[in-house]
Image (cartoon, rainbow, N blue to C red):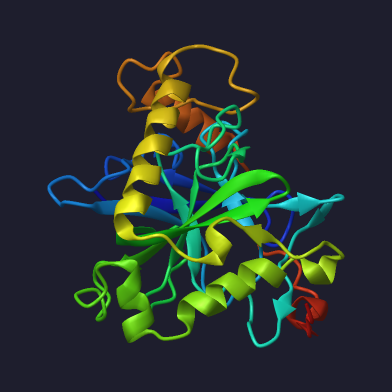
Length: 288
């Protein structure tokens, strides 16, 4: 199934959003309505791209807004950009999320002894393409890292676009080191230091910062999919998350296509916005 990203609001502003439509033109939630798995393909998953490689704007699925559009994270009333920590520029992968997954903040993980971060699973796609913001990409899972972010478990699933020229060679996490030596170390370094220019301490990891293999990652995905099913499957206190969807059968949060259309049409049309400040491209030299 194909999906269309629909931009709304003023670019580079607090109002900017990306909504989604499915192949039938129905407005949907990328959190709840895009299937986790690709039908007919074993261990192939859909990834929603939030941040294209080499860019800095910290875009993310808005779990609290109806239809869960992608928006830019905000800190102290200002749009959030990740710093360029030399030698990296912006994100070093296509960064996004696995739909129909959720890290339950009430669940303590048996491996990290930390609770979930209340978001869909984060994904780092390591192929050569720079995917567009809002793209839905079919990926194969290679492994997973466990970032400990402010006392919460924040899994980072390592994946590769199934159409990438390297895809046939990349089947598990050890293959990444074989064919892309240094890339996993760079990934660990990026996550460890990226908040330091903002005055925060270095991030910590479970498993000494090492990535776990594909089988481990698939178990994490299965567990967080089950947690998502519990979230949308019954009407309970969901902690302020928006669970409205148009396709999840039996969900008490399911809305009609007409209702989702009205939500999309109520959002302001996309317009040009102010240019990004030059400081966004500033280098930061980080020493641990």
